[in-house]
Image (cartoon, rainbow, N blue to C red; front, side):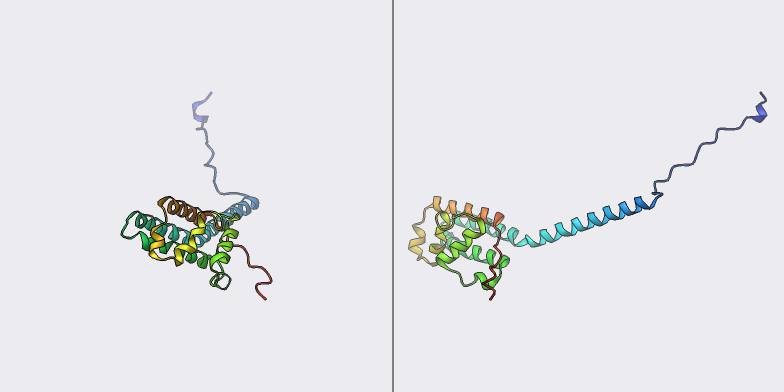
Length: 169
């Protein structure tokens, strides 16, 4: 063997990470579009749920006020207003703005699918909205705690029913 005839081993060049076929380009485009659409839908859902986050923040503030004897009556009166504002921010104003008393509680029952507002602690809402301060002072802490817990669960999970076709006529 003649050492002059020997050559170094030639290594191939690095493999490109760029896809070489049209199918990979299409798959990459579809994956990118799917990710962008998913992100956009999540962002819109996050924006749509802002009223829930704001209501939960206000409910936490009211919890603190309910614990303070000086602001308890004001906080009790603010609970029905909070529930009404949450509904008005997520439902058609014409469908719910005029509801009161049992019609209001029936509507709230529809949003959760069970009678927690007419038979449970939610039945206190009309009392809180219209009662005198002496009547409000007679409401026990356990009743208030059960109502606040119900309102918190309701804010997190309620679904506004679609308006009936006859209501639009």
